[in-house]
Image (cartoon, rainbow over all chains, first blue to last red; front, side, top):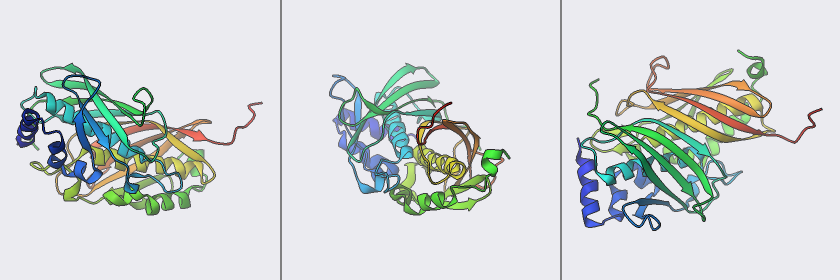
Length: 153
Length: 151
């Protein structure tokens, strides 16, 4: 059940940021990469999403799919929670709220997440995605994740 | 049914084009299922490459977000029509429970308020019964129309 938790913990101990991509099939499909967050100077992860045509919403606009930007933010948020390793169970998403701030241009996109509150049962996390300047985000999100054992059916 | 939605779904063709031509939609297998009068239903077939956790087999939440985002946007396009562009302002998804592993996921969306500058949509995501959703969503869209005088 908590295999993913242990795999992320092992990757962290080994400093194996690149290995995080392989752990989640959907992230591998999107091509999400991970690297140390340069500005944090500590423990943060930074997600990187190289541009591909398959990430565009509609050819007539050429912009990145809005749902994809939300998905990227969500994935970086979950991986940051796992990376911090303060939970015995996999985080389960409760809700996620994405603000679309600028057009997602057809270029490489970055994202980082910040844990605003780490409780025993619940985590509040904010995440931001940008292209070029981190100060000019294309999308931002906040969400809650549960850290308790899964419910029965 | 509101009068805004009743107006013969001016964006029908636009919506069909969105689902046929979206490169990212194609990557995750997003397809249009039903284009009713005012609501719209779309689907993502279950696939191992969309899984968020290999141990449980659950689809990644991001797949649900993308399904809901496109279905909600399409419901707004259905109401606004082809000549108008829209952009998503924000989108909130509540995950009521996990979507059952191994099953296709559906979303049904409706543009329930078309105001002068903003359109509001709601959406439910489910496996087979929209009355028993695993996720619900509210979103707002900005209408990018030609500037008109407000006189």
